[in-house]
Picture 1 (tube, rainbow, N blue to C red):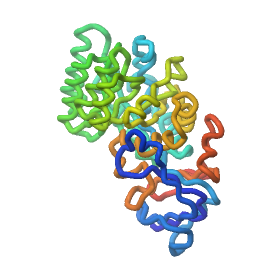
Picture 2: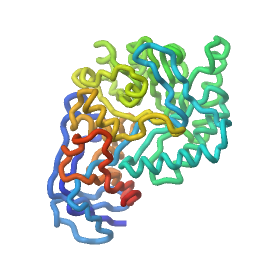
Picture 3: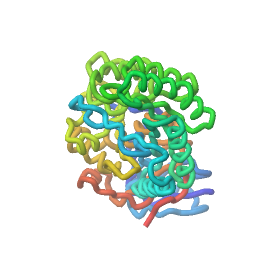
Length: 392
């Protein structure tokens, strides 16, 4: 199928196929008066208006701004997993038992949430699936996420999330053994997850425990992620760097040595300003991280049980108002860097020939209008893989 997108006011994209580190986060390419030719779900070319033949489907952008499809690299099947990270208070596990309530209602809620994400310009989400109950629950949640994801046009990346099963030593040890010996092999064998994430810090696993779980996951082909839960932030950051993790999430700040290690290893720091807002915690030090040359992405931490800040646009607005990020940095953080946190920056997150045709057409004439109001959803149309999946 061939699609031509015409009458674009501005085409805005980060450049490059990997994470935009440090100062590069503020570098966006702004192209006026161009059109995009899409073939078989991929961007074939971008050229001046009128340079392509009018073949196949023609989509009139009506003088709007075109961005890459948004990427949300941090959502949960159940409620958000971590709160209180700034004050060092305990973790609210917020994980989900597959046996709680009716599975049909859970799946309908998840499906509605994914459809809302599409409507707001999101083309890709990560869904973290974890349970503090049994291995069967963890595997079943992953299976549900895959099943529901396939019922939408959204690109869904599933993650096995390891959380402690109680505070007693024997329960923690049993939980680690179950993750390493049962959950990780089952997730890999059934191809249910791409990542293994572990809650690390106060109320979560100790760094040494998280290290053992994540190495087992990596040995099974699951890329590691680190879910910071308070306490020694630098220890969690150094663990993520040592394991070359795809991302470290919920990191509010870190010292110079840890920052250097994260920068060198290319670990993406997924910041979640909506969580700080909900729990009254200090906002993450995004400015310091960016100036230290670290790659920063933004996520929502939304739980599909219906808890949290759901809108990527709200996260972007908070980044502008509370994290001292520029609009250009925030756009990179919800597109290319967020894709890098899911290890798919070669596939999506920017608009360039050869990459997936994931686009958000915004009902504004200039991208700087995005910063004009907090929480505004400016999306007119979402295109995923070259197909219109949401429009008025």
